[in-house]
Length: 177
Image (cartoon, rainbow, N blue to C red; front, side, top):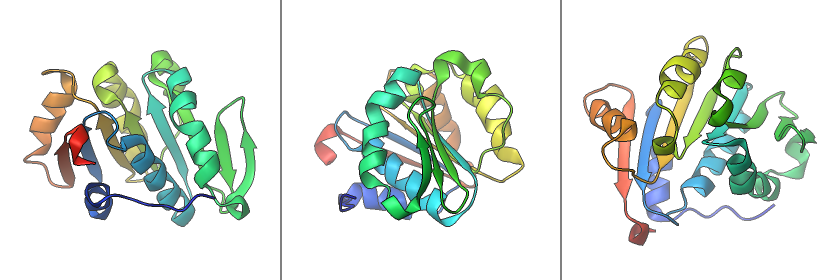
């Protein structure tokens, strides 16, 4: 297991108590690393199902699979499935990597929390119609991490979050890491 090190801006995001967080940051800020730490911290302390969702399944594997293998303490892992990109933890939590490119495969389960990685590059209804309802029963959380892509649905969500209770938003450039 690697030592966990967050830079000050990542730590600021981590300290936020908001249920929903939006992180708009430039490339190489460390968004995926931060997301992996959040997933591990949450899955390690509260039993439930946790997902990391990227625009494509392949991206999820390339972005975070190896990072999670390096970060999860070995004594936390009850099992892992590289074909399904999932970890089963000893406290009965699961962490699964998913792709938004097959949105119908995301339907059905309840989630304790999820990360929407590169949300600006997903179809907006993946959050609105598919993922958000899966968080209702559990009161689960979501973190949106993305590089900006103009004035699209990420920007709209960012604007809406400004006046919503239980939402927090963060914006950093690549240089801020």
